[in-house]
Structures are given as C-alpha cells and as structure tokens.
Image (cartoon, rainbow, N blue to C red; front, side):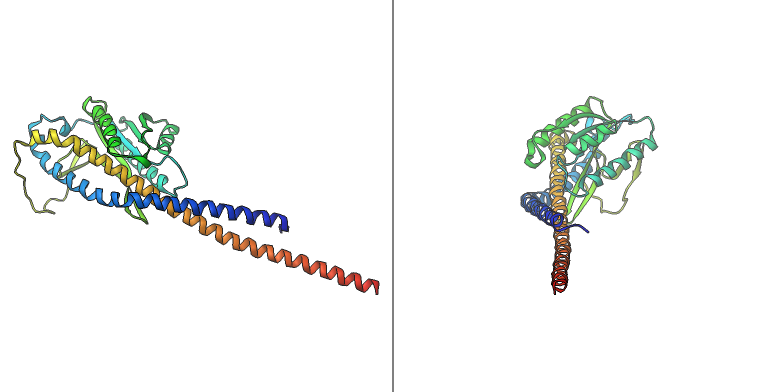
Amino acid sequence: MANLKELRGRIRSVANIAQITRAMEMVASMKLRKVQAKALASHPYAAELRGIIERLSGRASASGESPWFRVRQPKTTGVLLLTSDRGLCGSFNVNNFKVMKAVIDELKAVDPGRELRFWCYGRKGYTWLVRRGYKVERFFVEPQLDKLDFQAAKLVVAELSKAFLDGVVDNIRIAYTRFASVARFEPTNARFLPIMNRDFVTVDSNRATQEGAGSEPGFDYLVEPDALTLHDLLVPRYLETVVFDAMVQSVASEHASRRMAMKSATDAAVRMNKALKKAYNRVRQENITKELLDIVGGANAVQ
C-alpha cells in the first residue's frame, strides 16, 4: 500500500485534473450554446432545399446540358471529410473514421480500381488519412471550424465544384457528424455531386436503385423561365448551403461530444479522489494506531 506522501500527491494531482476537465466542460458548454440553435435551424432548411433541387433535377438532367446532373462512370470518387482540430472530444472522431472506413471498404469491394481523393477540414481527419496513405487534395486550415462562416463554405464548394466540373473526380460525398441532440450525434456519409433525381438514390453510381416509390404523393413545380436556367442560378447556392450545414452540424457535435467527455472525466476524477481520500485516512489511522501501540509498549517496558 502507498505511503501518506504518495497518496497526498495523487490526491493533489487528481484534484487538479478535475479542475481542468470541469473548466473544459464549461467552455464546451458555452461554445455549444452558441452553435446549437444554428445547427438545429439550418438542417431542416438544407434538407428542404435539397428536396426541391432534387425534385426539379429531373427536368434539367433530361436535357443533358447541365454538368451538375451528369452521371459519369465512376473512376475517381472524392470525399470531403469534416473532423475536429483538437482531441479530448470522446468518440466524435472515432465514429466518423469508422463510417469513413466502411465507405472506403464498400467502394473498394464494388470497384477495386476506384481511386479516392480527399478534401479535409479538421487536423484529426487529415492525420488519419495521411497515416493510411490516402491522397489529400487540400487540407483547409483557415478559417478554423470554431470560427466558421458562410465564406468558408463558399471556399470549400469552389474547390469541390472545380474538381467535379474539370473531371478530376466523377462523384463526391461528404462525411461528417450530424447533430441530433446534445446527447446524440450521427456519423453521416451523404452524396454531394452529381445532383441526383430524388426518386433515384445511388450509393454507388455503377447502379441506381429506385427508392420509396409511392411513399410520397407526386407533385410538380411551375418553373419560370425554365428548369435549366433556374438550376444554373440555384445550384451553387444550394451546394454552399449543404456544405455550410454539414460544417455547423459537425462543430455542434464536436462541442457536445467534448462536453460529455469532460463531464465523464470530471465525475471519474471526483470518484477517484474520494477513493484516494478513504485510502489516505485508512493509512493515516493505521500509522496512528502503530504509533500508539509503540508508545504503550515502550511505557510497559519501562515499568
């Protein structure tokens, strides 16, 4: 059993750690409070906008003139990976990497010759990809995700759109964590480009599967002047909205996950501190008892 000096040092160290984790929990809670409302409000808007664009895409894609809807035989797939810059956020990055690995394995199983190219926002994702030998086209550093704005989404979309329109990649996906609530975050792998008709969802562009036929009542939109002109104006804004929503969702999930992780660490430190104090008091009592026995034994020997 440890002596009193060692136990005092452990108690002091655990108490200091508890103070640090409690402070980090408070900081994460404050940051989460700022971005939570934005995350919850942006997702329904982005989802509704996606539905409108995809419903209208049937008209624009029928003409074959718009490159945004052109489905090519996939030889290269691009992925935008959104992670955190820092650690100490629980399983936030780990769950994202699991989904990313599952997607990579699926694509490799379907098409072993498929080339993968990545764009990263977040130092943890960049490190994970580089260590595994994947090619990272660009690692976005500025602005930081904590200070993101719509200009950051425009920068990312400009890079991804250029790669898609120039034929560098044949399709693009976004891997991020969707913020469902302060206690639930869902790693998500969403298709991004090309824009597909809502009635057809492609996990891999080698095959198209009919989804949800008859699940929703059929309806159409009246479009002026025409669907192609409207899409040329709306698609860039739509893509920026989707990327910005993914960024906001990822940041909110990161702060919520860090808050939960730091709260768990603080609770564990408090429990450990209590156990160490019990052990300290037990050892101290044993030492006092030994000293009393030595005193009594010495007194009896003198007598």
